[in-house]
Image 1 (tube, helix red, strand yellow):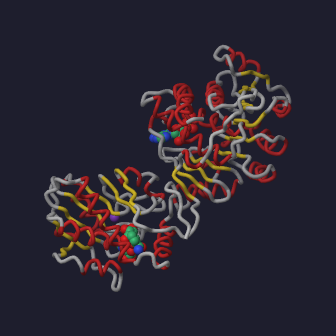
Image 2 (cartoon, rainbow, N blue to C red):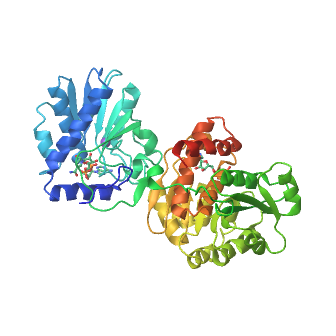
Image 3 (spheres, helix red, strand yellow):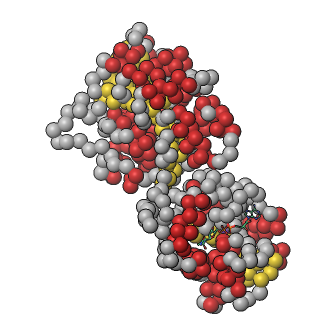
Length: 491
Ligand SMILES: NC(=O)C1=CN([C@@H]2O[C@H](COP(=O)(O)OP(=O)(O)OC[C@H]3O[C@@H](n4cnc5c(N)ncnc54)[C@H](O)[C@@H]3O)[C@@H](O)[C@H]2O)[C@@H](O)CC1
Ligand SMILES: Nc1ncnc2c1ncn2[C@@H]1O[C@H](COP(=O)(O)OP(=O)(O)O)[C@@H](O)[C@H]1O
Ligand SMILES: [K+]
């Protein structure tokens, strides 16, 4: 059986398959895995909530409940005052039923639960097997926990949170969540990420059946470009950014600043002469070129062109519709399509998607926020399945990398790879921050980084830069923080 990197994320189904593969291999029985899981929960309860007067363990009918019975038994053996409540008895002949039999104390119904502020609640009602909405007795019990103000420790997932999507309107806010082997998407996608509290991932000796296709984004996923000592500026790649009109030049400048600080040899802003006059008053090392009557020719004239940013502050939908497919088909540059250039294709995205396929694998990176995503992929946006599945569907349809922005940015490739970004803070929720991100992607792509890796690395670096710039940063500060972030991780 393959083992997989610690930053892999497994869907509920992949996690269940890993459990089954581990059991089928004979390495561990189901009850032994459940014992490991329950012991990890008990250990977390003792370590994090040592002073709890009583521990209330709420058990569901499946294996999540089974983990709860194990934890209850171990805590009671350690002298903790434990009360157990069940929504209903465990499924007959299940591992959970065995675990429940080994719990020697009373089992009450959920309506008997009366938690107090100094108590701890262990939520072992539902985990990976949950779908749909919470039953009413569970909702009532969780509201009681919330009103009592006592901390809740979730087993695997806060009950009511969908492990695949992170959705979970009725789940209670947990202080901590103990999950097993690998995270699920729902631990990182909102609102699940918030509801989990602190997440502890415990290795309970599960072994994966299949190679992963989803990861938590981080430096282990990509390698930043490095340059030889004898390199020169044209060898380091060049980025072009298309400017908006005279009164809309800031976004292009922010993209160019993000690009320039990500390591290529040169960045050039192309635009109409009156817009370039405004740029000239603001910038020094970024080059300026008139777009002229033939924008494609203007781009092709740039030495070492490796990536183009099209869209931030652009304003000109017709130009976007004309230029984007031409860049994909007639140049070798990577195209980062953002903002207005995404909206430009809302009525008919097919020429863009066809050009992405004609232009070859991974030449297009789309960076929509939720509004832009809904304009380009309205049916996918309206569908079920959560942000991860939606980003994957969009990548598959478009033939490009889709970086679906937000507090829980997801990057998806047409071949099914996907990463969820979790290092960004609300510092990034400031006007122009997305323009900087588009520039970083282009800056990395211009240095020959493959598009999926460039998009993932950019999202992570952007998050670190926002963190470093602080909660009151403006977009310029995020760009300015980049060299220190690169310095720190050795880029
Ligand atoms: N061997 C394994 O498979 C292991 C599983 N583990 C635990 O097992 C959990 C998964 O176990 P299960 O697959 O049994 O799933 P769960 O225990 O999460 O839930 C399954 C049960 O809940 C019911 N259910 C689901 N949605 C419902 C809804 N909306 N309303 C009412 N009832 C609903 C199902 O009918 C089923 O009876 C993990 O989260 C983890 O805690 C751990 O013990 C480690 C080993
Ligand atoms: N609460 C948040 N936490 C982390 N990142 C965020 C949050 N809100 C926004 N972001 C990030 O900030 C950037 C905003 O980009 P965008 O919506 O295009 O804004 P703009 O067009 O003003 O640049 C995106 O990278 C997004 O993922
Ligand atoms: K749970």
